[in-house]
Length: 317
Image (cartoon, rainbow, N blue to C red; front, side, top):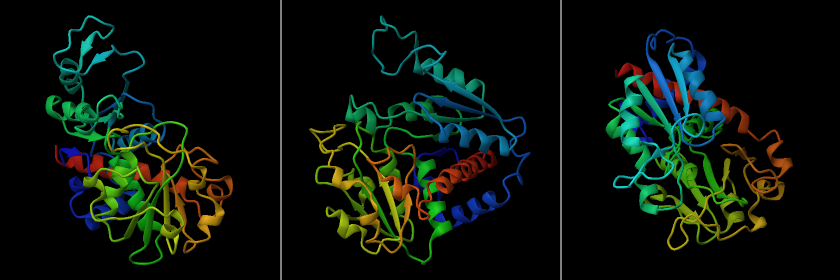
């Protein structure tokens, strides 16, 4: 595996899941695989779970790990070609990337959508510059359009908790005070469309995700109808994708908050969220604190998804 940016990079999901549960059950089995290999994690944006879980995954495999926070202690980086660099940015990414590649064996990159240019975001410009110019295997720790480590962890969690062979999984939009990227719901849809699940997306009109991620999923604008008989509820906010509202909040309707009344419509569904979560906006206290909330085991599986991906990358060096 030379890159990891979407579900297709994993190949057969059944094989990937089997490997992930082997890692989950015996995380130190391959503790010499990464001996004398260095993992560089580059963060253009904040992180808690991604940083900790990925660093721990690398350490489980015996890797040295370096964390670079671009916004703290590094030169400010220019990312666009053709720009006259007469401002506050001292170094261009096109020089910085190959330099970073000199000091490591595998690179993880975290760079959110900026909402300044839909084209720039949806071409995953920064992530793809690392893939093109670093000379090293590169994986996404959340890019502008996707968060495949999170989505893989979500799939592992569903496989771990499912009670039927083909569970009903509902991705529901929920309100948030800030305009958030579509990366998490995009990747969740990317994975669920390839998994053995009955997948439904529900959101207010105007919050349609990009067609390449929605694919054949059922889209239901009535949240309560979508929840009927669901086995898993995955709540997440995202901003509008369609022009002219790209990156904007077009609804803050509190009736979309996931509460006990809506969860009662489900098949005693498990509640999922990638975290961090805005309580009593995305989900009520009662739901996230209920026995059916699996947000903590879901977060724990971030280590498993990261280690499975890193293991494959190390094996391909």
